[in-house]
Image (cartoon, rainbow, N blue to C red; front, top):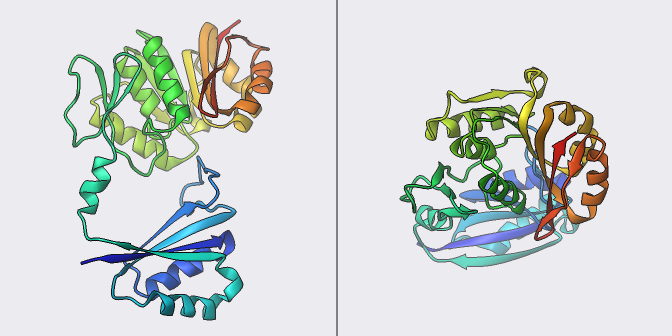
Length: 292
C-alpha cells in the first residue's frame, strides 16, 4: 500500500478544528510541526503546542482524492485559512523501523553515551545512558543539551550533590549520576516531565539516587553543582533563587541561551558567580560560574 501526505500551513487559531476535520476526511494520522522554526521548549502539561504558523500534516490512503479534501476544508473554513498546501506520495515501508534507525547512539565528550534501548552499547566501559526519544524534552540531540552533557563529561561530579533545574526527560540528572554524583535532585514545573525523569531513572537503575520535585516542593538545600538547561528569560528572572541553591565554591551551568542573550545573562549571574567565558554550539551558548 502507498500513502499520501497532505501538508497544510495554517494560522494557530484554526489548528484543532482543522485537525479534527482531517480525521473526519479519512486521515489515519495528523501531526503538527512549527512552520517557521520557532521551537517551544516547555508547553504547559495537557496542552497542544501551537506556533504563529503551523504545518499540519494528514496521512491518507493513496486512493483518497486530496483535491476533494481541500475543497471540503475550504468550504468549512474559507480559502484564506489555508495559507498554502501541497501533497506528497509515500511508498509503503516499515515506519517504526525507519523511525528507530533515525536514532543511533550518541557520544558526548570522551566517555558519555546516550544509547536507545534497541541498540547495543558501543563501549561497555563508558558511562552509558539508556534513553529513548519520546514526549519529554531532552534526548541529547539539541545543542543546549549537548553543551551540558559535554560539560559533565569534562567535569564529572564525583561524590557531589547536584540539582537539575528544569529536568525534562532527566537526561542531565542521569548523566550526572552515571558520572559519579552521589545524589541528584531534579525539578520541573511540568508533572509529565517528572514522570518521564522517574521512568528513565528506573531504566538506568538509578531511581534510588534521583529525587524529583515540583519547584515549590524542592528542599531548601545547597548543591555542589546546579544545572539549568531552560531558557534565558526564566534564567534571568530566577537568578537570585538559583544562586542561593549553590554553595560557596560550587558551580552553576546554564544553557538554553541564544548568542545574543549570553552577555546580558552573564552580567546578571556575575553578581554571585565568577563567570567563565561563554561556550558556543551553533546559535546556542553555555555559561558556567563558580559561586563566590
